[in-house]
Image (cartoon, rainbow, N blue to C red):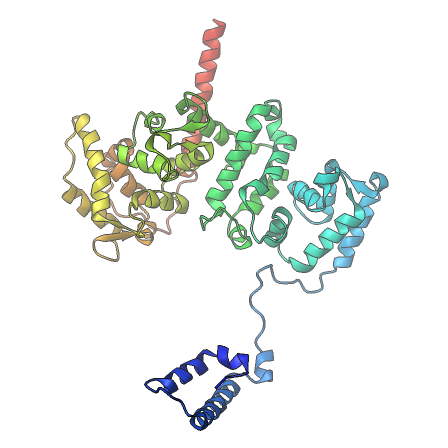
Length: 461
């Protein structure tokens, strides 16, 4: 017997009923089938009626999810459009160039350095200017659909039809910062370093903002970060080095100089041998291989290298192991089998290399069993014999945990401070004013400047 109604055939409950009816039977009589089918449909209709909420009750439940921001009451879009039209009358032929977009951005109630995204979103990148009609059409559509700064910013930067931004989407904005910010005047004359600075800033943005590790930043991630606040501060702060989260030139200088020192052939890639020179080979061989090899698994061993973008992530994670991203970075390196937990075998695998380094320094290493007891007391994992990412984030001493297993210099530094005998730091206590990364960058920048000054004096003398 054929069922003509396609919705019935697609109903999983009906299909289950038919299967139960036909189970163990070679033949299903039509009369029996029709009777059971009618009874089943009546039950289904009754169940659906009971599931429906009364209209009055549905109306009392307000909408609570606004992925593009909650619409503002009494927000007059026409008044904003009128201000924009008035601003464009000051431009020749009512067309704005890139130099004019700063004023347009302020009229739109946007930060000054949104000017390039606004210009490109209205088609200015193709034509060299933006007409008042094209800009108003673009901005009206955004105001009607996006109701908070994060969704507006993402809509401006993202490719058409995308609900996320990728790394290349940030290039025009960061290049504009290089071209126009008063704190980077000296950098504008060195065009060969523009790409490196832009790459550094973009990697730092994704390092901090892209908590999902997808390479795609969503509006939710923008809302939860300080990215928009830092972009807004670019207009107010003339000293770019005060913006240490993303835009600091001093931080870029430190990162790039560290990379340049290791990249002896200057092909913008470093291999395991190059990485071994970082901090006088402070990393264990097993961890160096994880850093280099994890990104080029399909390539032969001799061809496995990391570029400058990957080095930015490595250096920041190496010097500050207290952040969420750095903990995730090193956890991924240590999770050899990718099962989401660190087993005792994986801890022993990395600690063996650490012991070899200690023996080369004539230091007797702590037996792994004793070290393991200390690490477990430090982390206090929920599941015995397994350490999860949540365990490491919760313990607030992940830096000590990681350095004990694969960073010889910092491990010895922690040993001198006797970290395993002191009480765990309180989560609510006030931390230092500077982060570990900021302290490292400040110290290294001073050393690099002093070294350069000494070289100049030597050459002049």
